[in-house]
Amino acid sequence: MKLKTAIERFDRQLAANGRSGHTRAAYGRDLRKFAEWFGNCGVDRAKPDDLARFLTSDDVLMKPDCQQRKPITINRTKSALRSFFAFCVESGWIKENPARLIRSSPVAVKEPTTLTSKEVRKIRAIFDRKNRPLVQRDRLIFELFLGTGIRLGSLVGLNRGDIDLRNEALHIRLKGGTEGRVFLNPGLRRLIRQFLKENATGGPPVADGPNTPLFRGQ
View 1 (tube, one colour):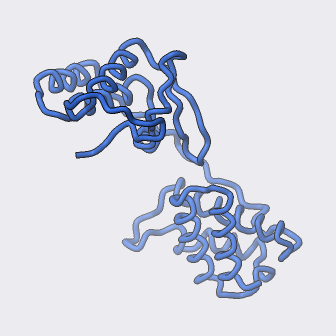
View 2 (view 1 turned 60 degrees about the vertical axis):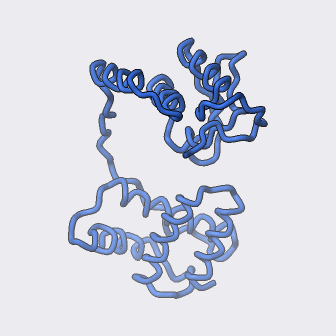
């Protein structure tokens, strides 16, 4: 099995397994880079030392502008190689995984950036002064970020059926396609009830179904 063909089949399997388009695209870039560096040989030609030489080459360590890549980016390349060659083993194309010795690089934990109490008050004051059709929607989005810590990707994927006010919870879709649930405090529940009743457009209530997106654009 040639390397590039194996990479195409690996991507197809990732899609079948429900991996996100972002993950597939990132893995694809890393694996195609390896194929260009190593050559379109059979996957059985790759050995642990080949992968070690690739991971210590400028193709992996350096950006096109000669700046050093961050450890988290290099770890993604390592993850792509581990997953790809594990797939090759399970597919029966090779007997041993040449990526079995690869370990992730240490990554410094970055402290999260948060808003100060003063900044929160300023933003809320802006909403109080605004009188435009979508201000209610924007206020709810801000308060959901603030009150639940929800990711942007999870927020934009919310549907009306994900709201569970009876159990004071919001069902969300997490990174990797898994599902989770976050608690809704009394203030958030009040804002959601008001939002659903009046709608962000300022028009009459709309009888939408559970799969209708919670937030709509302009």
